[in-house]
Image (tube, rainbow, N blue to C red; front, top):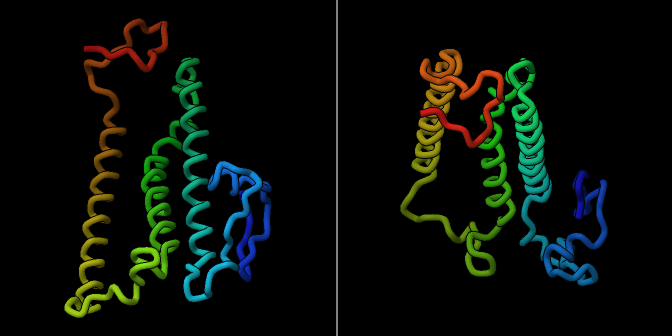
Length: 186
């Protein structure tokens, strides 16, 4: 299993952990794993893109786990309000789950090429004879515009809510005691 590396010429050069791939795939660290070299060249997906998108997705997940864990520790200690750098970092980090989700989707879609249904239907055979490429491009552009608009509205609403601050009726139960995750003021 490769943690960090650069794929080139069908090989990945980098930091690897031996036998972990076999353990994850077959629950047996000694079982051989079928590699890309065991497949015909026409059945191999774009390796570099799949590799990098997967690692970007996992990297974002790890970064978010670290950020949330540190933030929770600081909140439980009652010191999160005093760390402006952390609060400023948390605001733009709301986009990271969406980016991780998109990178995961790219990994799945690029990694399954050249198949729509593995072993049964190739992508080249799944093309519609009725839907023209211009129609597909138009729908993709329109969907992208809708998603960009939704993203901008989300960021505007989020920024507006953050600038306004908490609701006026919100007050900690006891100002001397930091709030915990379970406390809700009604």
